[in-house]
Length: 152
Length: 84
Length: 61
Image 1 (spheres, rainbow over the protein chains, first blue to last red):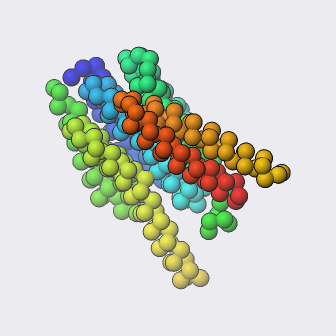
Image 2 (cartoon, chains in turn green, blue, purple):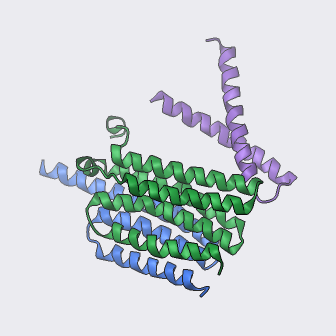
Image 3 (cartoon, rainbow over the protein chains, first blue to last red):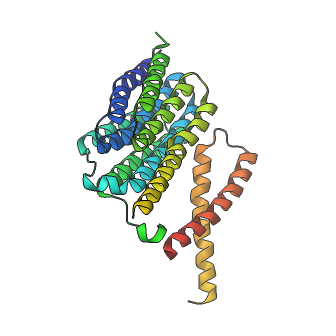
């Protein structure tokens, strides 16, 4: 048990409870936001755990999640577009807070790793995570580019 | 004390799985299932099984919700077509 | 546009994709050795051709 795992545990206990509560109750727009931010939270926690366990290969899991999580949210944004059009989900402050946490985690991990290929991998993961979360929340708030007539 | 993170991950999985059963609307259920998939991947990682976590992520985070939502969409369309 | 410029454009696009994907591979692997480099270069080439095909398919819509 070190600082990394303690931080991961605290973030998972606090943020995880909020995510489960948000996704299980309330209107649809709150649920999709909770699903989107769950990616950011769990990915940051996985990065912290990879550092805490001293196993750089665990970063792979965070990398895959940073890639697939936003894809999942985009699936929801695309297929639920009709339901979300009426009151679009917006949570700018919450999204930026989650993204800020993710950026802080990536930065701390980079500082701990030191320059090298491992740090480049962390930076790629962080860029995918932050970019993916922002793109997904934007797609939720403003709708996907309309492709209804093309794809049916 | 070192098991605290395992306990938290287990509790998260239990809470999300209960929510997935308790929620009745299929669309909301797909959302809860997406979170459950990621929570399970986290549990596997915490239990030091990263390869299992990777395959769980690949299936649980995007593929399961996609399948569910596509079937919901198809059922809705059929119903709409029947009433018209 | 003549055939020659089309060919040059296609090759340079695939090359650009290949370079980006090969760098990505180089960053993600744990140990750099000859086998990894060969496999990485091959996979990056496959990915580059696929990426160009995907880009063209998106543009054609």
